Length: 550
Image (cartoon, helix red, strand yellow):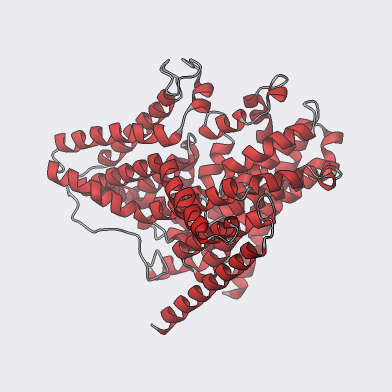
């Protein structure tokens, strides 16, 4: 009780100090738009979340700080920025994702009530005998679902939870496995919503010499953070070399059966599952959801000749349709149809009554309330930092400065760091490479291998910063998919993400220095091999260190 009161007092004092400083800056008349002050609100939110371990108040404090800085000392303007430009705009912009979350939660509740998850758990206990096998199975499924990161996080979480729970894998480790395959695999898959987004950001003058998708594909071998993250997962699982806060969570799960290592839980309601449920009762709904969601994304993008947005007819153009689609429309479009099909299937199998099926809708909503709340606050923070305070224009100015231009072969490493910082502070990888891709394209010619290395550094840094940031939508979705305490997920993932980031930074330094001598292909092979060796060596060292401590 005393510790809870102390924690609340520290949180209140920290927020009070932040607000007072923001008010002082606002009344002083200091220019905040397009300056370093534009990055202060997300930095405040992230720092408070890591210090206080309380994400809701930390995010709101970040939103309030940004509103005060942008208000010029006007109370009514600060309130308007907080409510209208922040929270209301956030809800309007992500309403489709909210609907998708609720529908997915309802489908998961249906599967649980019908006994599909329980049956799948029994099958997993019989057929996957080891913790390593359960973790690698989670990794493989994450790699296979490369279309969209939101869809990846929530689907892998729903399907694999019976496996990981049966083998006492902590929710922190489970959420890391989900997060570390979601964005990285989307970022190296030529057919994905991410590839399409990257292609659309390539300037027109560059696109006349090389298409956006070709530029994306040529950058894949140098996307060190994404590729090495996948290698890192396999190595840490096979070597059983967990370290840092994650090791504590894993030991607690193995020794005590506590998957959370916290008094707080995100399991939702308990109810009796149908004992007649079979494995197919989990597989069929998920397969239907995958197929219909992909069709929904393609339909909204105009693949079937019906252009949702009234633009160019993209009939039969798979990549073009993904570039033209909108996940906030396509995913809920598919989820509604999938929900109807799953309800009909469950009723036909006589696993659930119609009244029971309808009860799953509010249960799904209740299960997703934490994710929806965090996503709303995080999006509001992005809106104020990017749209009101102009953090994007500030970073663009830094990248185009004479100092940045003078670094020559070190530019890929510099671009990687800048992308990491921007994505970490804003919580958006798409926004980060949307800002940096046009700048990078203007730095190098199409014939220069550094163009592809620079583009990959921009994309890799965006994913890295997104992974490390507690206000990132993908990080939030991973916590929701694994039903993990969000702050636990962030604190346990951070050391792993920073390890891969450090190795990736060194590889970009090496690639920038040797690309002229070795050429495109050989540079990619040599640097990736060095990166994998560095990961294995580091994990073996950490495993030896843990053994000594034990």
